[in-house]
Length: 72
Image (cartoon, rainbow, N blue to C red; front, side):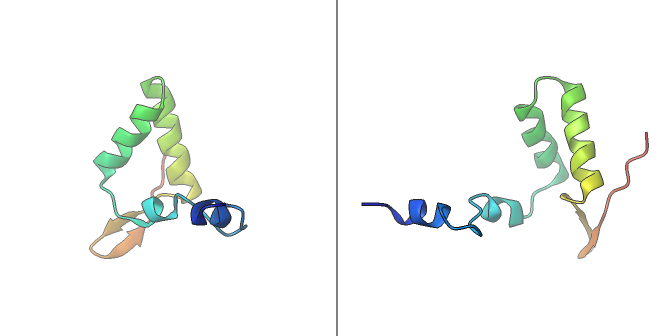
């Protein structure tokens, strides 16, 4: 017998990370999470820059979402 999660994972629109992605986290928590998943600080910075430039991460300023521009 399949579980409900297995059945949902087979559908196209199911994203198991959606709940985590939609919650609000601080910038420090984001940096810590990316840093713990990478091998060195250069890789962490590159991953953070990619997240900001693609718009997958936005910062909230007094209730308004702001995109981050990264200049090299």
